[in-house]
Each structure stands twice: as C-alpha cells, then as structure tokens.
Image (cartoon, rainbow over all chains, first blue to last red; front, side):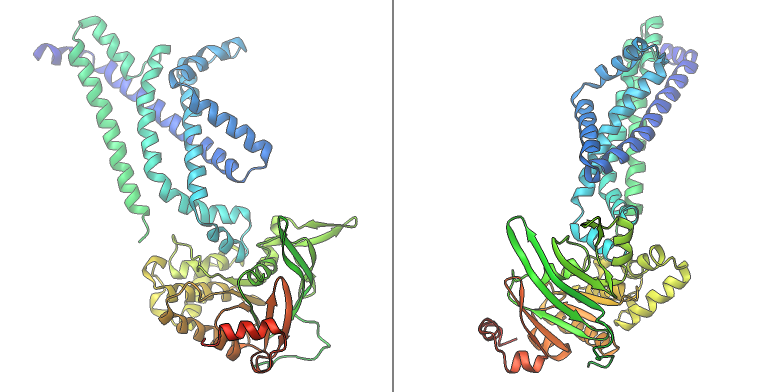
Amino acid sequence: MNEFLAEAWDARDAIVGGLLQTLSISATSIVLGTLVGILVGIVLVYGAWPARLVCRTYVDIMRGTPVLVLVLAAFYMPTVLAIHLTPFEAGVLALALFCGSHIGELIRGALQAIPRGQTEAAKAIGLTFSGVLLDVLLPQAVRSLLPPWVNTCVEMVKASTLLSVIGTGELLLRTQEIIGRNFLTLQFYLLAGGLYLVINFAIEQAGKALERRVAYR
Amino acid sequence: MLTVETTSLTPPLLQIRGLRKSFGAHQILKGVDLDVRKGEVVSIIGSSGSGKTTLLRCVNLLEEFEGGQVLLDEEAIGYREAGGRRVRLKDRDLARQRAKTGMVFQSFNLFPHLTAAGNVMLGLRKVKGMAKAEARAVAENWLRRVGLGERVDHAPSRLSGGQQQRVAIARALAMDPKLVLLDEITSALDPELVNEVLATVKELANDGATMLLVTHEMRFAREVSDTVVFMEKGQVSEKGPPSQIYGAPQHPRLVEFLRGTRDH
C-alpha cells in the first residue's frame, strides 16, 4: 500500500494531467456535439427533404459505426487530404460527430413527442416558425431531453478513453504509461476506474439537480 | 345582440367565398360561403364530419385550402395571386394574418412550461412587442375578466379543465383580435365545468367581440348567436337567426339533426 501511495505521489502530475485532458476532451465534444445535435434534430423534423436526407445519412452512419473506428478514421483519414490534425483534435472531432448524431436523434424524438396542438396554439397567437420553436417547442423538448442528454454525457466521458489508441494523453493512456514503469497494474487501474466513477457520478448528480430546476411546477 | 353596423354598406369583417378543401380524394368543404359582420356572433352546427372544424381551421390558416377565398377585413387570407396562380403566403405573412384572429381549441393547448399569466403574455411580448410589465398588466386584467384573478401564477397542470379553457380564452382575447374562433371549446370538459366556460364566452359576446364558433351546445348556440349556420356534407345547407333555425327549420337534414340533439 505504501509503495502504491509513493508511486501515485510521484506520478501525480501525469494523473492530474490525464484527468484534465479527459475532462477537456469530454466537455469539448459534448458542447460541440450538442450544438450539432440541436441543428440536426431540427432539420430532421422540419427541414426540406434534401437537408433531411443529408442529416439522416450522417446520423445513420455515425450511429452505425463503432466509436473506436470513428476515432481511428478521424486520425488517419484527414492525412490523406493533407489536413493534419493533432491526436486531440482528431479525437474530439470523432467524439463530437458521434455525440452530435445521438443528440440529433434525441432532439428529433423530443420535438416529435410534443402534441401538435402546441404548435397550432403557438401559430394561432401569431408566432413565426422561429418563435414557435424557441418559445414553445424547445423549452418543452428540453425537459424530456435532459435525462437522456445526461446519459449521453456520461457515455462521452467513457468514450474518451478510446483516444488512448491514437496517443492522446488522457487518463487511461497516462495510467497505462505509469503501469509500464512500476507494474502496479491492479492498483493504478483501480485508481483510474475510481476517477472515472467520480466524474460520472458528479455528472449524474448535476443532471438530477438541473432536472429538478426545470421541472413543471 | 347584434349591436354594431348591420348595414350592407360596410363589407363584412369575414367573407368566405366558395371555399373548397380536400384531404386526399375526400372533399371536406365543397364551396362554402359565409359572412361574419363586425360584432356578430355566428355559430356553426352540424353533425361530425360535416366540415365545421375544418372551416374554422382554414380561417386561421392552420389548414391549406384548394379553392375559394377567405377575406378578413378585405384582405385575402393565406394566398396571393402571382402570374395567374395562387401561391401560399410566406411564414411571416401567415403569422401576421393569424395574429388578427384569436383561436380557442377543443383541447385547450395551453403551454405547459408557462404559468397562466405566461401563456397570455407570450403573444403580447413576442408578437405585439410589449414590455414585460405592460404585458403582465394586460394578462392580469384579462385573467381577472375570465374569473381567474387568483390563479395568475398557477401552472396549467394545477388548473381544472374549465379554468384551463378560460386561460386559453384570455390568451386569445388579450391579443385584441378582430375575430375570435372557438372550436368546440366545451367538448373536452366535464359536464359540470361546461357552464363556467360558456358564461365567459357569453360575457365576451355581450361586450361586442366578433365570434365564429363551432359548437354542439344547442341551447348555448341559441342564446349567444346572431346567426346560426347548419353545415351538412361540406356545405352550408341552412342559415338564419336562431329563432328561425331552431323554431322553423326548413332543411330535412336540419330537422333530423335537431331532433337528435333535442335534449341539449
């Protein structure tokens, strides 16, 4: 135990650095993915058919491909087009696109679940399409969307470990490097697992607090 | 109740001319003509499937229609002529025209994420561009008029059906529409809640609101209307003052229809 604590203390910079990297990968891809998802979800419900076709194709491809394959593709394919992405950029690109497709579907479902009378009542008072969407439909969609959205956030934190295969120094890769030096396999994997658990637990608690805030009174 | 200009010199507020509408191969409206004058209350009665509700929804542009014209204040609603073809108006123009009419739905359709006042204020703020305090004052005033002064900050889920429908009436009337459309507004209510809603509508009619309503409440239609219109199979088959429609109906289908609803 003392040996583990000493090794962990020595490796503290690597662990904290990896943790921060994991957090920044997750946060960036969730934010970008959510923005993409909102746009895609709205187009899937209200877009003209060519736009809908494009979004539907994007969503189906992303959702039908393993995340690891997406990560590898984002890392190797742009090079062919002479675009050079750092492992961090490539990884975040893959995760954001993956996240966007999932959130797009969530938004589509949430919008379609709202009774048609809501749109009609909003139109009847003279709101334009953007007003109907922003003031009536999206505020209602957000409430049903929140639990699955929090779920997706947790999935993204877990998916961020896949970036270790393209050499992004996130928590899992850093842990593996530490184990490579001191061979305390079990202890350091447990430490990493515990840290992931803490992050996801915190996300779920924050999500629940948010749900309570926006619930209908 | 018809207190305002009945002279034929002023054109009617709402003019429906030869309105035709189909859902697929099924023709719902087969050339409907109908006028509503300012300050007039017109009730549409008829069996289900006769096209009453569709007619109302066409006036509020919630349905497209294939033929005929709807004129509100002498402005063609929903379509314009372009190179000899009729073209549906753009979203912004449709929204502007819809703001001239208020609509109350069978299923209330209150916005569940807003309070009673919030429901009334939304259109005032976003469509009429009122400041928050002013919109709040107008909303409170209207909610008081429909008897809900004590429920201003209640969420719709905490109101009874009758109260929800009165909020919906306040929401429509607060926009100061030229014409109010009421679509079977008591059909989704428990019997004991129907009267509070009908009493509210009667008061508004007495205050001079112009209304076009679809109803199954025969006694109410008789009491509140200046004109009653009987629709049958997508056409107006008889219209006249309530005394004539209920007292001396001509059309055999109307006679039959009234016999079926005698106890109302």
